[in-house]
Length: 164
Image (cartoon, rainbow, N blue to C red):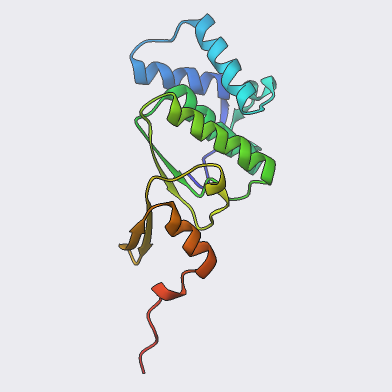
C-alpha cells in the first residue's frame, strides 16, 4: 500500500509472527522463526530494534518499504502487488528494497505486479513484461525495452489530442 496503516500497540515482531501463524495454520517454531527474521532483517539492513516498534508508527518512507519487503520475504505470498515501491526512496534504500524483491522472487514462485511511474527501480528489478495503462485499459505492452522507450519518450503519445 502506498500509505500503510499505523497499528499502535502491535509490535512488528508480534504482527509478523501472527500473520505467519494465520497463513500456515500453526505458529512457526520459535527458534527457526527468530533466525529467519534476523536473516531477513540483516539482508534488508534493518536494525534489530525495529521488531519492537509498533507497526508503521513513526516509520520513515524507507522503513515502511523495508517492512513491506520483510513481510513479503517472511510470509511468502503467491503474488505481491507493489504499488510505487520506489516512491520516496533514496538511492541506497531503493537498491536494498530491490534486492529484497529479487531475493523473494528467486527463492519461491512469487509473482510480482509492480506499479511504477519511473524506470529507476527497473535498473535493479528486471521486468518480464511491461504494460502501459491509460484510462483503465492496456494501451501498449512489451518487454523491458518498452520501459526504456517510455523513459526516453515519455507518455505524451498516449494522450488524446484535444478536440476542437
